[in-house]
Length: 248
Image (cartoon, rainbow, N blue to C red; front, side, top):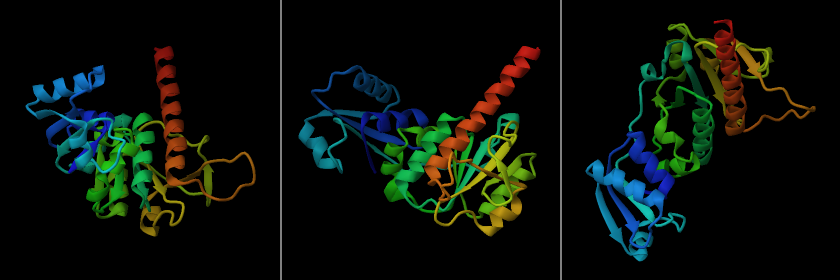
């Protein structure tokens, strides 16, 4: 497959979630970022080709590649075990995400917030990998992503290993800002159309919701909810670390 743009190409090489076999760069590009990518590629034994812009245009799907593309394999996915990081575990199960742009936006926010693993129901995203990579600004290449055939079983897996398992759902819920999000935790998040499945809800121990500033009742989309939940989790964990350091 072909991935396009310096951010995507750099992430594919540095993330090591796929095999990059060749990099093509506009022969006229002389900027520092391009030089870094080409040097990394050469050091890793990846074929480097300096070619005319027209050749890159012929292989690219659009015109936003910025003069650099790469040939690579499909992404490899991780196992649930790789998302476990002891007390630092912060995993998110996202159900009902159909759009590759939303997938990428979710990965971008959660990776930035310190998520140790994004679990998705099993699906073939091969034809959308370039879109996911670009919309995540490369984050999808760095974080652990699991394609799980049984989301409810995934929640049970984390619960059996000492993680608190919470569901982002308004019914019988406590505010996100009142919930304890420190320590090992898995948060299940549903798409705005379908929400979470009954099997996943059965395995979670508590519901949390995002308070609004007014009486608006419609759900945030999954990527917005992931950002809010992700960074509140990061805030709480950062405050907890500060507290421990101060006490010490």
